[in-house]
Structures are given as C-alpha cells and as structure tokens.
Image 1 (cartoon, one colour):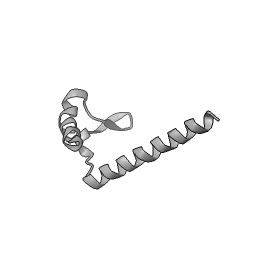
Image 2 (tube, helix red, strand yellow; image 1 turned 135 degrees about the vertical axis):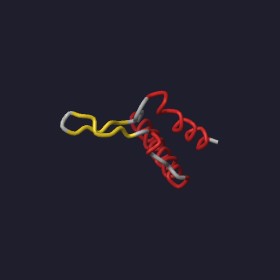
Image 3 (cartoon, helix red, strand yellow; image 1 turned 90 degrees about the vertical axis):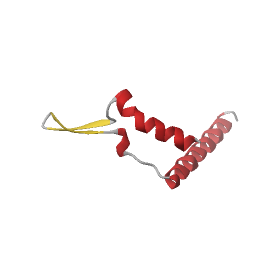
Image 4 (cartoon, one colour; image 1 turned 45 degrees about the vertical axis):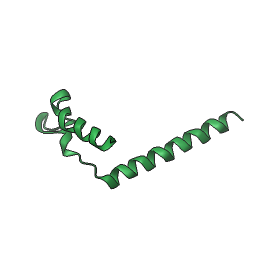
Length: 68
C-alpha cells in the first residue's frame, strides 16, 4: 500500500538526507525540522489524490485546447 511505503520513506529519510529544513535566526541555526515532523493522515492523502486528479484533468484539457 502506498501509505506504508511513504511512512517507511519518512521514517528513514532523516538518516538518508538530513532535515527537510533548517530555521535560522541572526544567521545562526536555531532548529532543524526533521521529515518526521510532517504527518499526513488518510484524509490528507485523499486530498492529495484529489488534487492530483484535478491537475491531470486540467493538463489534459490544456493539451486538447492547444491542438485545436
């Protein structure tokens, strides 16, 4: 299942790539934000999938309009 794969990636990505972002204040590192700080629940993934569908339909319509 894709959610399990994503969760596995999130759980190991800090070791592979380091933090997703770093907060700096006065040019000094204030805090590292790890990938594990971001959690998407099943409803969030449904919204991600819905957004993907909307974007793909928009892209298809744009391509069709450009071929006219």
